[in-house]
Length: 216
Ligand code: AP5
View (cartoon, rainbow, N blue to C red):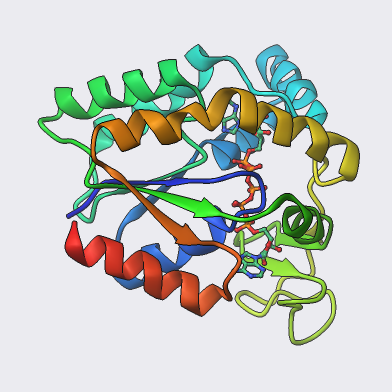
């Protein structure tokens, strides 16, 4: 069992690799982005406020995401957790350490996925996601076999995210460099950080992550 963080800017490939680890290793993916998108559809005031913040590309407040993650950690996971998009600030990182310690656990690896900004724009503006099963596609690098139909579940509900446009992406990148990138130093100082080349193809990135996990 291993608990790991996939750390990287928007479009680095965190979700793509997390889904592969779920299939390959029986780990549980905890994506705060997915949880917040679910909360958006709840029709509550909180859901509407979260939707506005996300569509602008800004970060949602720490207390909301820490609360969501705390509920999931409390349920436990036999294969370990993949933290995808969490933590994103230093207070979130401290809270994660405390939540895991309360269960007698810790982090086994923090994997930084390095991708340059130009590639991120191309990845984000070409992405679509299946509204039924969450499979992720890209118009150029990974299109579905039949246009508009999900390979995994056959659904015709392939969607673009509301924040996947160049304007929101600029804000998302600024938020990443200002508030999330300090976590690279935070985990380096704890001896937990490993970097992988996120510009490589999906298989090569998966092999690099597997090799970090096998040594953890
Ligand atoms: P979130 O949903 O976490 O989005 P993100 O971090 O911006 O990351 P993405 O999901 O956009 O990208 P990814 O790295 O998963 O890439 P993917 O695998 O899809 O967060 C959204 C918003 O929610 C935030 O802006 C914020 O408002 C809020 N939020 C979430 N968590 C929060 C927190 N902890 N605190 C506060 N607010 C929070 O890949 C992208 C594309 O590239 C795909 O098309 C894919 O097919 C393609 N691709 C992937 N890998 C490769 C490869 N190796 N080669 C070529 N193409 C590839």
